[in-house]
Image 1 (tube, rainbow, N blue to C red):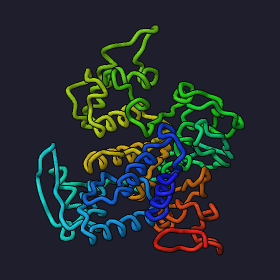
Image 2 (cartoon, rainbow, N blue to C red):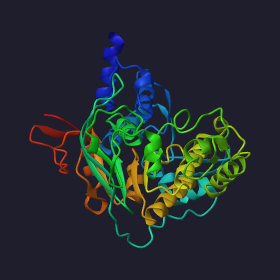
Image 3 (cartoon, one colour):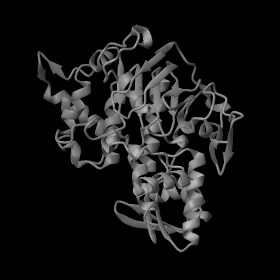
Image 4 (cartoon, rainbow, N blue to C red):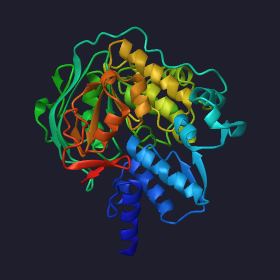
Length: 412
């Protein structure tokens, strides 16, 4: 009971919401990361090593965490901060060491560098920003969700409550939110992975009602999906890359005939993914589990994009990949949208959403805000919406009974 009280106190102090009674296996990847941070802070550390700690926080909570880290440093704590978010390195750190291929390749004072210059040190070449091309004209609605309400199939999951969204052909819509606010439940509902009691017309792909279709029938209609969890959900670790390519693409890429796998086209498809997305591996026969997280992510994203889908739902597209790989994935998504695909990007990385999305919705506590064009919204507004204390109608101004204090919205 004493430990539980300590955990709740740390969560309150550092803005890291977590239910101490939940089982870890029911948590999203982002929520599990909060456990790591809280566990460290409970120990009053003299040396604190943080690996990508802000991917589960709102912008306001990030600033609160940074205030805490600066206070710890002033009190004599040494902090090693590992991150690919270079603007955070600039804001927080006095020294930076750059690693590439397991070797130290550079060192710098990040306060004297730009995020772009540090990214180029990381990848060893010039970094080009994603090319959005000419302004896209959006087509008809290709993915429509209408008043979708579903109970989570996890004991401590988040129920979906009246979700509405429309993604048009050629449009990239971002779904922002702190981990654990219904994003996983939304992905599984759109992919057809959960048994649904929703109304038949609550989900439509190109005008066809699919609420009671499983993943295979939705893929037949031209939809593809990239889940958050790479190993075990996006890929089978003990199967080869060729076999993993076959699993979702056998119909659209004609990789099977008369119930048999067509070995040559299957290998060619995997080889094409490896080449197009620069997947670092020994070849298409390598087991998926032998790849680094970033390279497996590139393979899974490439597998779905190269099927030329009409609708793509992708969760955390650049989680754990380096700046060069992230730029390549972003460009691939932009190119796909330019062909008329409707792309829904579920991401906790607001930089990513601002870089590639045309519009954004925010999920909080299983509810979804109205869509906003990216040109009409700021990071601060999205952060307030992510905090959950808003009217969910696109108005990010706190209500009269709330206040903003220390960068975090709280009850007055």
